[in-house]
Length: 136
Ligand code: CO
Image (cartoon, rainbow, N blue to C red):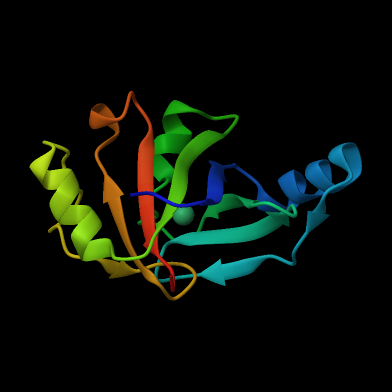
């Protein structure tokens, strides 16, 4: 059902510092910071030929990653995003398998303008999974 890994997201306390670290130490190609107020994060993309990593810092007072950073002050892997071609079919199949969808179960518009859903980390070995619908 799942396709490629679209991105891996890492929560960081300071996205500028993290971008510099990835660029200097790892020689990575890192985008300019981008504010996504509707998602409560400020992000940069680290692009590789086969996928990307998103480094994200909390933006605003109600950021969904604030609690994560309180538990992991140095930052840490926050979620992995898999591509699917039909997010409703994927959701229904997952619910059938006993997986829990976060929120009200309806897809929201994600950081890339595509429909996304998140699956409960307890159902996937402690890993928050995002599904993103991409054109098949
Ligand atoms: Co994501």
